Length: 199
Length: 199
Image (cartoon, rainbow over all chains, first blue to last red; front, side, top):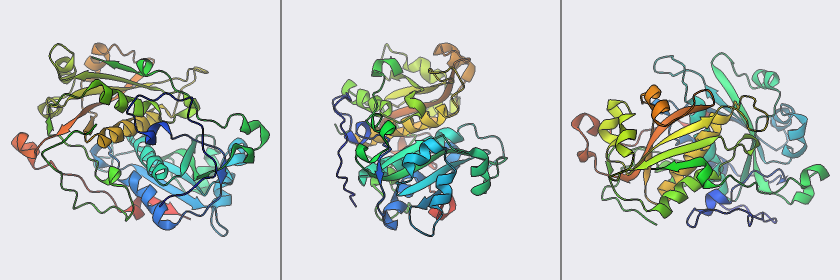
């Protein structure tokens, strides 16, 4: 399964270590998406990659709620849950989704303090399976949370909506509204020495 | 770079979707490790994979503190920060590390509510780069937190120690103490339908 984009992102400003796989250094979060049908078998594999992620006590505290950008589904409703700044570009994604985390352990009802960390791992797995198919993801904290809890029927006492995300085929920056075009490039990172101490 | 293990884990009980990459479904968190030198170039790539992860406002709230299992370093000290149950098996890992998260945004000093989620994404990137090299990781919440904050010089008012982790070459379950041998197999997952609603 391989989705082709007519646009190739410029990663030449990034400086990965010599043998870091491009899977990591050539992943980024574009805003320009070209609505393209993603067959069920691919979408199922992307969510399945998240499913195999590690979690504390193997609790798998993650829940994913998604909608395809096709008539008759809930895409427009999900889009309306995002802040305007995200709606402007996310409207052409193939899929919009929400990541929801369970606050307590099933096995003892205590607070699960690593649930959001575990959801982050699952999110990265999804993202990288998407990259292996030629697709890109973009997560968003900017949403109308009260409306999202209500619309998605998430009980805030037991679960937390962590973020929304877009999934799709990258398009040219030219397809974006003018103010977003200038921001449409892979971001840099701190030097490795700033984030890592080794003994 | 490819590390060879003489032991092959049995993933036959796992039921990934048809086109999920084995990178995800054949990742697990073993306890049996065989201490093996990991050259700097590989370790740097593993941490570098984490570095390229996405984060809210590109804040990169992650810090990694690691020690190689070689004489003269801090491995024994780091090992002593773990609870006994983890020390029993983690002592033969090639590297022990800690993931630390910055509590506040650099850009506005407000609380960064997605920092641990972002650290989870970086952790999964590390783990999967390790898998591409034939290595395995295992994260642990079980540690002596007060001693860890002190020993690692982490200021709890600005940073949170999220977890410890082991990295290394998988060994046979036979190498483990008897009570751990029975637990030494890849864990199952909930069905995809339990963690995902699609519209």
